Structure formats: C-alpha cells, structure tokens
Length: 246
Length: 390
Image (tube, rainbow over all chains, first blue to last red; front, side, top):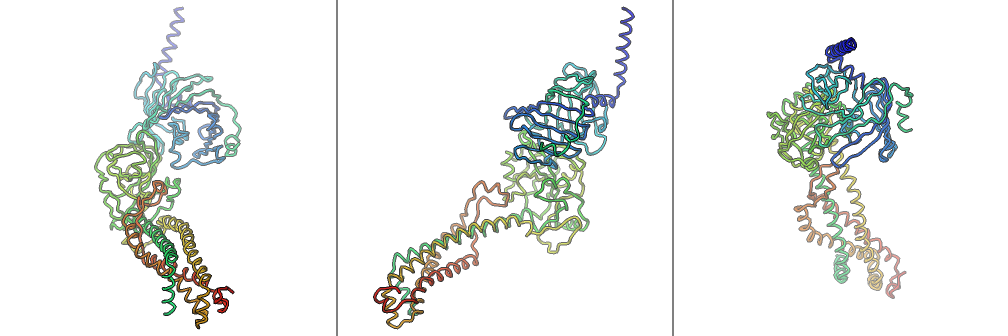
C-alpha cells in the first residue's frame, strides 16, 4: 500500500512537472487539438438574447478542416432551410423565402449573423490559433472553480481580425473557459465564455458557451452543442454551391 | 379690325359663358406655370446644394470606387497621383478617404461610412472647422438625418470600429462635435466625417484617398491613370434624371388640364355656331366671305385665350409670387429618396417657362377655336338665314 502511494505520488509529481513545463504554444496547441478537427458534424442551438427578447435557432453543421463549412438552419420555421456555405474566404447564404443565394462580402461581412453577437467575419475566421498568434503565459487564475492558465495572444502577422486576445485555459481540459478579443487600440471587442463542457471521445468540447459583443448592449448569444461527431466521412457535394438549393 | 371689334362685342354679349371659359383656361395656365416652376426650383436648389457641398467642380474617383456598390468600397483606396497631389497643395482639390465602419449608438451595432476630409479645405462647403484634430477622442461631424436616425446629439460619444488596411479590427471612442444641416443625403445618411489625417492613421493608409474633389475654379481636367474623372453633369445626373422622370408624370396632368380647358372652348364654339346660324347667314348675305366669318369666330375663340392670359397675369402674379416665397413643404417620405431634396421647395419661374406656357395655351386655343368653324364653310346663306345647318 505504501509503495502504491509512492508510485501515485511520483506519477502526480511527474504530471505536475510536465504541466509546468508546458509552454504557451504547447497550451495553445492543446486548445486547438480540442476545438479543431479534420472534420465534424454537429447539431447546435443558438439563443440570441436581444433587447427585444430571445430567439432560439437550431442548426446542423458540417465542417471540413478550417476552410470548408456548411450550415443548415432547422428551426424556427421562419429560418428553416436557410443555408450558409463557407469556402475559404468566401461565404454564401441561401434564403428559402426568396429562393436566392447571395454572396456575403465587403461590409456585409461585418453584419451580425442572424441577429446574433457574431459577425459573418467571426464565422469566417481560421480557428487554429497556434498558427496565427504568438502566445505568452502571463499568469494563472481560477474561472468557475477551475484552475486556468492566463494566456496573452498577439497576432503573428498583419491582417488578423483581432490584434490580441486574452485567454483563460483550463489547466486540465485545455479549453478556453474565457476569452477576450481586443482591437489594435486595446479596446475590448468580444468576450467568449464557456459555461459547460463535455467530453467527446478523448477531447473536451464546449457544451454551452456565450459569445458577447463587448461594444453592444444585450446579453450575448448562447451556443449549445446538442450533438457532435468528429472525424466522420462528409461527402464532397455538401461543400458545393449546388447543395445550398437542395 | 371689324372682325376683332365684332368678336369683342360677341364675347361681351356671351357674358358668364365667356368668363367660365376664361376661368378654366387661366386656372390651367397658372397651375402649369406654378407646378413647372416647382420642378425648375427643385432642380436648381438641389443641384446648387450638391455642387456646393459635395460635387464642386467634379471628382476623380479611385478606379475601384462605385458608390452604388458597397462591396467595392473595401478596395477603393490608393495613393494619389503626384500631379493631382500638386493640385491639392494649391488648394484646388481636396482628397476624401472613405472606409466602412461599425458604430454602436446606444449599444446597437450599425454599419456606417467613415469619410476623412481635410478640415481646412475650402472646396466644399461643409462646416469642417468643428473637426478639431488635437483631441484624443475622434471628432465626428454628422448630418441631421444621421443624427435623427441614430438618435445622436452634439457631445454624445459613440464607439467606432473599423478594419485597417490589413483587415485588423480597431476601435476608438468618437465624439459628435457638430450636427450639420444639409439637404444632400449622400453626405449625411450613414456618414461620419472625420479629419483625413486621423482616418489615414487609423486605417494605415498614408497619403491615400478614395475620391479627390476638384474646385469649381479649375477649368481644365487632366486624366490620371487609375483615377477616372467624373464631371458635374455626371455627378448630379441622378437628380436631373429624377426631375425629368417626375416632370413627365406632371406633363400628363398638364395635358388633362389643357384638354378640359380646350373642351370648354371647343364646346362654346360649337354651341355658338349652332345658336348663331341666322347671324352667320345674315353676315354672309350682307357680303362677308366665309373666310371672314370663320376668322370672326376663330378670333372670338382666341379672345378666350387672351382674356385667360390677362386674368392669369392679374390673379396669378401675386399668387405665384406668394408661392415662390412660401414654397411647398415636402412630405417626410422624400427624405428616403436619397436625393438632395430640401424640406421645402421654392418654385422658380423663368421667362421661358411663362412665355412658353402662354404660347402653348394660345396655339392650342387657336386650333381648338378654328376646328369647329370649318362647318361654316359648308353653310348656304339661304339655309342659314332660315336657321338651318347644311
């Protein structure tokens, strides 16, 4: 029994040493590993909390890497059948009401997506943060009773939407429980908080998260992942403009 | 001369019937002059406002700039050609940089357009002296329509967010330093005017512009590669086209009114010929030729027109003068048209308009007076004396 305790203690110490040795880049890569996948299919619910009330939407999404994604809204009836296709830097939206496909570009990308706190630009962003940000560990804090690394991310290159970010990453699960996104001037633009997590296969994933535009009033937009399947086979036709009208 | 005298006496004899025709014709004349004056006034006033506050002597546009396609705005900026820069240094041109932005009035996300302009420029008459560039917060000048739409007041702060030339978000607190009253909607609705240097710095676009507005004093326009020149006529063409399209519908109304006036004259002539067939017979029997009798009746008809013009001058002059002073208020809905329309239109009556309309009325009255009198040519004096028509 005593030997077992020593072994366990050693394992815990080693684990702790390993965690302490983690660099900012290492942590960010682990975050990326949790949040990105070769592909996935998800059904999610988006609750938009505006000043005039709350709207709930459900959507089914297929995502291939960081370049391709296809989303179809399932409810409410008013939005049912609306589809969005992202191919690289281009985004198309199909509206069943008008039976027309429009390309979202220029200033339209700045508009709120379906009235949420997310702009189309946010939706278009490359989610693999370790590719595009330099990272530094600036401290440790507790968020919702979870020990977190506090990371400061600064853009590696010109042209990223957010010049810097501050991220509170769960020390064990490597999920950013809170994230603040800043403008070049240092003004806080967006706040992202994960309120509930769940484990899918070996990775931790946000179950319920709130995305809030820090400059606008309102309580933000809540995302709930109803179901998600990683690394599945997605047929190529899904990511074609033809599928928007199907 | 005898014909004119007889015609005058006959009209006098007709009494109320004459005055009824005169009243209809003069009202038509006054209405046409007044209404057409509104279009002339609107075009004159709106084009003056557009030229003074926006267009000036014309504009050089960046090759990608298309004000009707917001998608082009992202790439509509570039370095100003050196020779055009010289014109700017001579104060004969002013560059304007246009960028898309997002503003948050009262916490609501709205898209807007940031327009950077040199506050010291004198090419367009916008009250830019309020754009004091020495303060930390971004000074913002807006128009009354923008202020009303976003519920903004002088002294209010609002957050402005934009993307720089590389696409990175930036945001700053702006302060409304002045609300200008302008009827030119393209410089008002959704537009935030800020100092050019500041916007160039904010967007990392040094020495760049989207459009370069030229002074009205510049008479010769050179062409610069990548910066096509748009002259005044081109820049106010929407307004002229709108007035043209609108005046077509007004002309249909004129035709209806003229038709009613002419119908009254035509009816009077027909009735006169029928009732005065014995008189016609007597005149022919006394030695008047048919042409002379036709002339007599035609002159009577034309006299309606002449009298209508005299009555129009007496009643219409003070009425139209008063109208030109008071103007006509435009309904609120015209604010949404996107044209440089003032709240009130003041009509302008040109000599061409007044004399042209008078000539038109007279020509039509003459034709309408003459047409029924052709019946007289077919009359036999003996039959006419008996009161019969041939």
